[in-house]
Image (cartoon, rainbow over all chains, first blue to last red; front, side, top):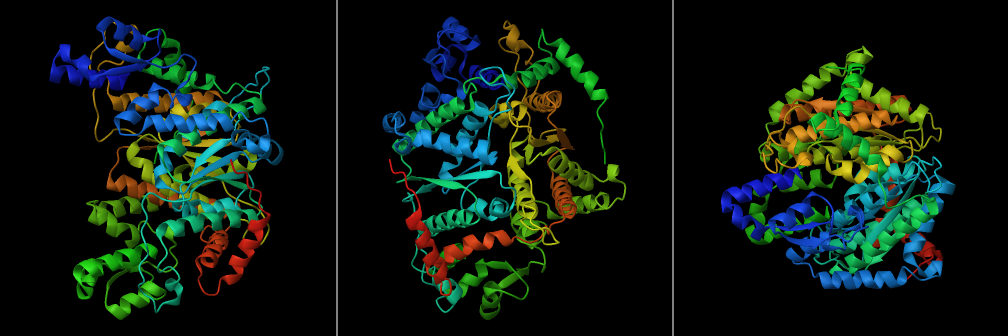
Length: 314
Length: 314
């Protein structure tokens, strides 16, 4: 809201009050909240977020589709990919249902083998954003204090983003030899949108000549396979999701599949994957410290605790 | 090396063989390796990496200083900051030595309280790169199978990058209510290089008016304090490193401090923080699959294992 206040104010100053609404589309709840009220009063164009679809599950709604369409993504293909994933994600045979397989394997590794960390490791810089998106989905959906029956369970598996091949160099030592608490999920590509052939130079040097004539894409794919193999040799569990290439359709497929996997994992953990009660406390302290009416007690409590804190000032 | 082969070839084609060396500075070992040999033979300008300084500890050597200087960073100030950190990092009183404190607190939380994950959470987008850098330092230095006495220990603590306030929204639910296996390290700023005041708009709306007149920087700082407080209330351990602002000197200070903290943690875990034996296996498989002479057995082993792997193709 603070960002909206700043942008709205700047638009109003530059364009005049009457033109601001030509430059803003408000995507919000169809009935509730300040933005809906504001849009109705002032006559802004709006798009609805379907009720019951929380932020982390909203990418295939108007929340994600509008900015994607504006930036040139073919959202029809994206939704077709999601629809295809929807078909396989309802198959009753576990071995043929990749969403349920993902949920069951990671759940069993967590509960039976104490694999408390899920490393999500795409081998493409372009998938960095998908990794961030998945990390929120997995963390916020499954990280829960109470089971649906009210029992304290402290459920969840910590997602870690790693991007190949960069994080091979930064993290593989830990994954190979550190605590036995991880499962690594590789996301590989059969072909890259852009590729570069390594030229036949320095041929006299035996330690380099094997690279000549191969492409960077082949090298990256090989490193991915080699890393998976090395982890398996060290008895470190890992699985690989392989996409033909990065397209709107394959991204829609992947995201839908991971959303269903998250819901299925929530079912296995017996928690509610759709709520987030743990984030309220921090918001309340923020409101109190920023002076929002009704939250004074949080400010008082904060100041009281502050006095008892140790500070090491150097 | 594959990237060097590509860049070198392109420069040679564009500029001619004799001019290539005017456009390349090679930073490498003073005596060993292909690049040193190549530079000597062809007469390239070079900078030395001090022997015994591994990649993840090399940022304050020519490895980091040359690109930083070229991009306009004041590297003299950076090194002054590092020198200042060097002074406090050798103080014998634990409570006055921030590097040792960092090592001792995280070590005790890991060993006595099973906090297997260290969340490194700066509240500034500009510190994203520092978080990536620290994650390699912490993961690769401490993630070790063997102690220095040869005992299998599977040591290490998994670093996770989180950037405030973004990852409050994506990860805080997990940190508040998920497994009790984390320590959160906040990195806060007393002032931001750029700040924006939130204008006094929508005053009639009680739920927003408290934001008017405050700045985004104040809002971000408040959210950081509120998040730390909420975690503490939930008995989730956390500490805060506070910088006055982002400058070359404060970055040098922070990096040096974290390097010493990592070395001290290695001492406490009784592992060698300077080696990385676990990354060799993956390299050997890569060499084998790419056809490098001498690594044929790895390819054969890979192919043998491949046949026994289960594939779920959907």
